[in-house]
Length: 34
Image 1: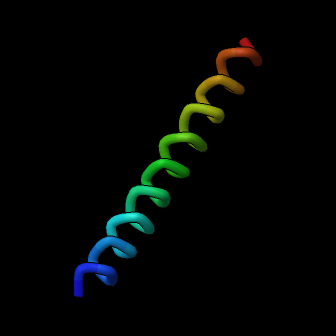
Image 2: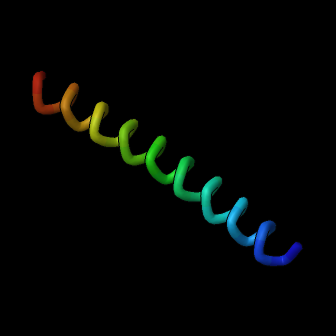
């Protein structure tokens, strides 16, 4: 149970981290375009 919960939290944090990372890269690309 604990291991499954830990894996779920890990997957969730990685997903949110990738989402934030892609958002930051997108914002940086827009900035450098201007």
